[in-house]
Image 1 (spheres, rainbow, N blue to C red):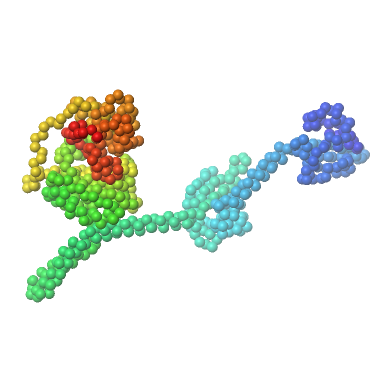
Image 2: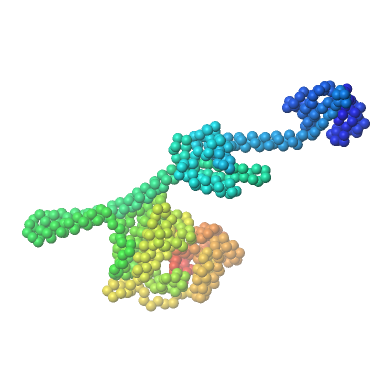
Length: 614
């Protein structure tokens, strides 16, 4: 916009017309001071003039019409140098100012974040000189920003300079490093463990102009981890010693009574028998008894690579002699129940071996019940058929005496069960993983095997199968297995509820092969749906107790609501004793142990069907 000396507009360009939103005729001929109305910003270089300036350029920043304008006023002179008017150059600088303000806000925010960060933030140029050192870095390493900025990185100890140089070269090449742990130092020379990340700094063109390092002090965390690890190791050692102490407490009374008599009488004999070789013999007996007492005090464990000599045993007798070892081992907060079955068959084994198996199982159960619980050890006679052995490789059909050890502990996942007997596998921190694998090896020496029934939160049952022996010289139990008649079948309809498809198929084949009508359900939910849709109630519901979504007890309760009087037969791999203690089974409810033979299944089904309706 060009004006004369009085400020009257002589000429303007199209840009001014667009800014003002007026036609040229309404601007030309007017006073410039009536056009340039607005608020002059305090940031202006000069005050806004009210008359045409005489000799100097004036620059002002004006806020008008919601935007910012930079206005420059230059004097216009004639050939003689006299001022004849002025030239106004008006620029819309709104976007530039806003961009600068946004940039300033971002910069201020970043500076505030860096200053307030609890992590040490250090920036370096390509030569490794410090360019940024936030307050957290001052607190962490001890050097002030004034001391650190402009200097080489002071926190890297001499022995780690080469390592640091390698990190720096990788970052300057464009790599970002995270989660690196390294030993650094403070200003006072003390070491500090840090976890740091490093990233390149780039300019607008993408070139690397330096690097930034973010460091956290993990000294206390690492120390705490080391202390925790040390304490855990101490606790494990104490637990081990406590277990040995409990075992010693169970053995000490009887063994010390025996050894006290041996040592006492040997000492008397040695003092009275002065003639040789009798005196030497008495001294030898005395020393041997003292050595036995020393062995008792140290409680040497059974050799785990020992080859056992096998003899004919009755499992109940071994269990009764191991009972006093188990009770002090499991502690007072675990309730122990021992249920030996009458008429138990004989096995061929080694008593020390069988006792060791019992102790290993008891220790494993104790570990699964850190807050106490119930431990049941029981025996039974079972017969395994080909169907069972086909599903359990490594087993053979036949008659077995079974040792079952059940606990009310936290149970196991399928993943844990799949590795349970592998050497060195353990779920306990610091455990050696040899207890159950050792028991497995001992049992397989007898031709037996071990099965585990467990669900998370449902405890565990270990069943150890020892083959029945018919070896000459072994006492035979009363004749109870004479020629049996074929098991009775029936025509009733049975609802079978089992989550394992192979077991559903087994039960279906056995029952339908003997005249029964069978309906299958995968779980309790499907069983309820089937039962509700059926016009007549089932004659019998044969259901597993431990199933996903709904257990057998819950299913029985629902069925009783709309089919009162229905007969229920429960089955499970857990023993009935432990199921009763866990509240999953009534003490007089019909129950079928897994594994079962077809004859056993048919007999139990017939027994329940022939009993009075509940």
